[in-house]
Image (cartoon, rainbow, N blue to C red; front, side, top):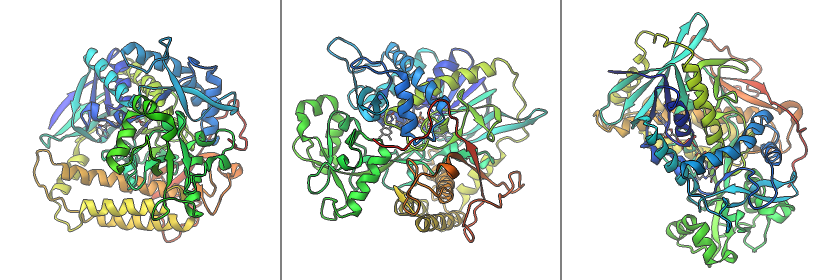
Amino acid sequence: MQFHKYDVLIVGAGGAGMRAAIEAGQRARTAVLTKLYPTRSHTGAAQGGMCAALANVEEDNWEWHTFDTVKGGDYLTDQDAAEIMAKEAIDAVLDLEKMGLPFNRTQEGKIDQRRFGGHTRDHGKAAVRRSCYAADRTGHMILQTLYQNCVKHGIEFYNEFYVLDVVLSDTENGQVATGAIAYELATGEIHVFQAKSIVFATGGFGKVFKTTSNAHTLTGDGMGIYYRKGLPLEDMEFYQFHPTGLAGLGILLTEGARGEGAILRNKDGERFMERYAPTIKDLAPRDIVARSMVLEVLEGRGAGPDADYVYLDCTHLGAEVLESKLPDITEFARTYLGIDPVTEPVPVYPTAHYAMGGIPTTVRGEALRDNENVIPGLYAAGEVACVSVHGSNRLGTNSLLDINVFGKRAGIAAAEYASTVDHVDLPDEPAAMVQGMVDTLRSAEGSERVVEIRTELQRTMDANAAVYRTEDTLKRALHDVQALKERYGRVGVQDKGKRYNTDLLEAVELGFLLDLAECLVNAALARKESRGGHAREDYPDRDDTNFMRHSMSYKVLPDGNTGPDPDAPLGLTGFLSDIRLDYKPVVFTRYEPMERKY
Ligand SMILES: Cc1cc2nc3c(=O)[nH]c(=O)nc-3n(C[C@H](O)[C@H](O)[C@H](O)COP(=O)(O)OP(=O)(O)OC[C@H]3O[C@@H](n4cnc5c(N)ncnc54)[C@H](O)[C@@H]3O)c2cc1C
């Protein structure tokens, strides 16, 4: 076992992790641990843009952006956090520009901006041009730019190191974070990293669903690790479905296409969003567009042989706009569906895209152990975290913004904290749990196969916990997930070797997916209302009286340090899981919840 000591550890080398590393690395001895080579992180797949009220092409300001973010999140957004994000957006874009990011430009040489769903002028009057972009490769440019700047600052990277546990030490003042345990893919060795502060930036968990825009690696490891410590996950029921995945495949076509003027049509060629969102139509927020698409299909207006998708019509944009501003998605449609967007409408359907929930944090990125108290030394930023700036539904381009604003904040806070404290001793045998888990899985001879359990998990989540949910479908999903967890206990791993044992790691990742799917479904069952990304057919209205609050899911540990709550989850007799649900108030500053019309 190898031992390492740093001031700050960053877990994850996507946009959030590297933005944090650039700040921490200039203030403290910092290492980044990442299971992927940094530039393979999912941030690199982001397409459409990153928003900021620069007002480069038309009037705009941060207050309108804050309002859109709050209303877009169906008023579950913490308004103090949204305000910080909208204000700091401007510097976040300029920071990237100074680091060398090649944004698309206007004729006069300013950063160009385009429209995106839910971003409006003057509190909903019309769509506004707020998204800064680099063709439809904005995430790729951000990731490359941040990586180059990490290299410039001499940040140390441990690539293909899978963090499987965070170490907490008991002190007179309670638990503090003191390190992380990592598995090195190349050798199968376990490494112990001691540090004064640790930033989790491990991204999302889209792989609980089958039809998803997310990469194979998005298995929610950071959330899973946190949750298994008995620490809370916030708002797990809110999972975003992006309206325009390639039908049947889930591969993403950016909302930037609609930002440039593309239109959704049903089988009759009708621009159906005019009925659901008369003012901003196809540029309504994603939850509203995804629900509308599903309704079109359910009511018999879907297109194709099975009437199960709608069309994204880009034909009126012209070849030049498609080739210059949306080249990648034009190519995706040609490659994966054999359809040329220049001349034909593209079949699309909602695809699982983004986790609004995650590790609860303060606006400085400090991880919360309950509604009020932080775990000293522990931070989270990016899709793994829930600040909560996205409430129950994130607006497009607000995630690339979130990772830059809160990645930077977490990096600064982690380094500043590290400069004020000494290293705290690690507990005895800090790697015992990880060593035990790895040894057990490697020697497991069980008959259950990882791929089969994962396929069945994704099938039941697609069928029962996607855009529309009911008590019945959610109970079915919960029942299936719990049965799969039981089968997971008998899983076998075929590769017994130490070098590049991806078989073993896929088994570990499946364990995280199962836990997170259970959290999602359990919280969704208890939320008897429809809000943002959570649409209940049996409770179609938003219920501010009972549910204007964040959910907090705690795993009840064997030592019982979080006791079961007799009042929640409701109506779950026979399905009782080891999850205790609690609630946290929403932060309001200037906006009262209103009816949400677009
Ligand atoms: C196809 C697609 C297009 C998108 N387009 C846009 C867009 O145009 N605009 C927008 O705002 N948002 C967009 N999003 C969303 C946005 O890209 C993501 O939410 C955001 O990039 C997440 O960044 P992150 O740094 O939190 O995580 P990621 O970029 O996913 O990085 C996660 C990092 O964690 C590491 N990691 C994970 N587990 C472990 C572990 N156990 N041990 C060590 N390391 C680990 C990985 O190696 C990786 O480096 C898009 C998302 C997708 C999937």
